[in-house]
Length: 455
Image 1 (cartoon, rainbow, N blue to C red):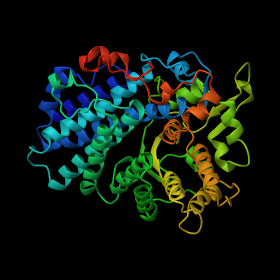
Image 2 (image 1 turned 135 degrees about the vertical axis):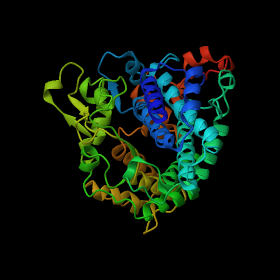
Image 3 (image 1 turned 45 degrees about the vertical axis):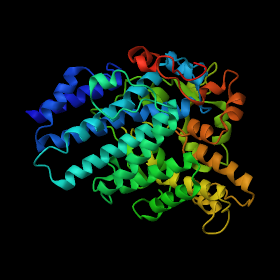
Image 4 (image 1 turned 30 degrees about the horizontal axis):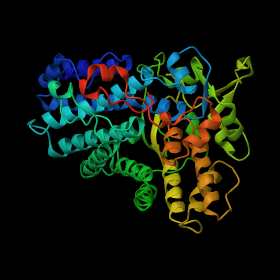
């Protein structure tokens, strides 16, 4: 019975995440009560774990929305205001995607805090199982705080499930949030398994190392970014798919490090933030012509399979192209990849290039050409550092398109204004971070007067 109650609680929390029906920083007391009642037996632990990963899953589509719709990959083609604001670069503090992303981030935080508070005192749970769940929770909390800090800047540092505390908590600095995220990620490694026997749907030590590689890349710590990317590449746990088309058409590929999965019965196909609904079903946004000019040429190789063309869609301002990566609930490509091996090669290439390691077996060019050879594109031969860094920026655009990286890449490399002012006359420096959602400011007195500049 307790397991059933917790399952209802977790599914309810997940549905609320999708619908935006709950303020997670100030959760309703009955949710707290449900959590306290149900985590009283070892039988409850598996359902708490499911709830943790469900909460992570609710962040995935929104990380793609933030990473690619704020950037120069797409233009608006539909009727939803939320996407019009993002793709046309007129983003207000009332943008619904910003509010939903904030909520989903704190769902993961809240469940992790719940686990930290209740799991240590729960008798009958084997130490290995307890340590693993704690490690998974801290890793995922570190991940969402990392994403949150790079999306919104400074955000509240929430470390409890106490309602009164969470109802009035101010913003910590971006640096403080990132430091807490790093602490969580590094703490998690000791409790995680070396590999996951059930594939890329759950975390292991190499998921943590892949996140650390990305973390240090964003921080400009090239030595550590190279080190952790190399650990993942050399682990032997993951292999590049021989054909890039597999990345577009298949779930849980051999190079997937962590991805969130959907099945025929739980894919949110009609939800506002479903990627298939966004990119294919409604075609709310379509690939921008400037992006198409880059991706559909010999330079990108097979990465042009990321988009598809149907002449029947070509009318008015519609160029007829769609994003091809995200299928319907009964397709084999409806998952969202959070980390895959190709990104590790790109992280290592950039880290090496920044350190002046350009040529030879341990140089940036070798890593770039691994992916270009897979994509059937011409290999890179230039040994000029500036040219190589430009090539890496383009490779990240080709290889990782519509996986949620582009905006974050432009911001972290301080290229956002140069690229985005060319793309849109509405772009302004304000949009290098998203706004603190207005609804959160209204709910939380400690956030009032602390909006990001320009919103």
